[in-house]
Figure 1 (cartoon, rainbow, N blue to C red):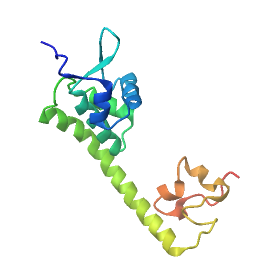
Figure 2 (cartoon, helix red, strand yellow):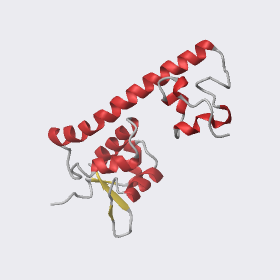
Figure 3 (tube, one colour):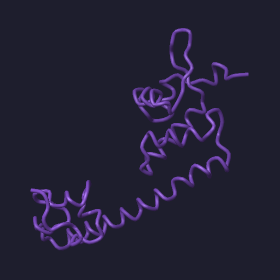
Length: 160
């Protein structure tokens, strides 16, 4: 037997319970992260288990996963019930490497920001926070001085 009308939440109730705006919930639905049933009047009704899926998506975003990545992970979990310990463990294990990489990157960024603020040079030629003339572009996309272990490893001359 499926959920009764008392087991279903309106979009307003889901928004209040999840802390997300109704527009965000409709967007999540368009992406396939959550699913709604429709009433005869075409109003959305969400199973209470949708709250768990939303909490999962928000947790995924907090560790840096995109909504697409969260959706891929959700595809591995049951939609109609809480995941078992084994099911959750399998998904969580896929996040461990990513979290470890983020921790390493954040620690490196913290060191570089502390060093730059501490030195006070603000040199446009060598500072890890400034990149005059986009000289670091030859090293690849992103904040190259912040992403490399040693700013001296960045190119001295690059495209102007």
